[in-house]
Structures are given as C-alpha cells and as structure tokens.
Length: 70
Image 1: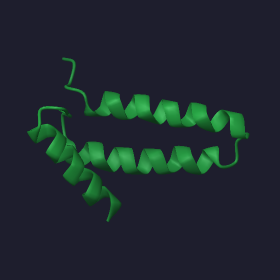
Image 2: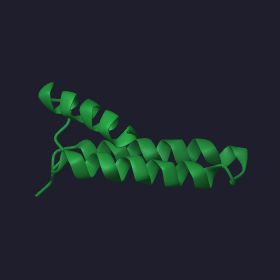
Image 3: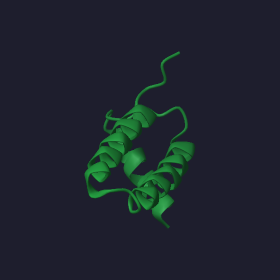
C-alpha cells in the first residue's frame, strides 16, 4: 500500500533526524490522500499550472514533516 511505503520513508527520516512530524501515521495518510487529490485535479488544469501544483505539494509536505511548532 502506498501509505505504508511512505510511512516507512517517514520513519527512516525520523530515525535519521530529518523529519519530526507530530504523528507519522497521520502524516503519511494525509500526504498520500492530499497529493493524490492535488495531482488528480492538476491533470485538468492547464500545463503551466501543473508546476505550481507540484511546488505547492512539496512545500506542504515539508511543513507536514517538520517538527511541530508549539
């Protein structure tokens, strides 16, 4: 399953000190479903807007995997 594969990568990033999400399981699920939705929607967008969608997903993923800002 895609979520499980992503979770394994997130957990490896946590072990390496690169990621610190508040909840790795929730982060993986949110990223899989969120990315799938954005990418599916971008298929119907003009070509020039697709790069912006990819950049937005990268930015959101970085925020999700960052340490919580309490």
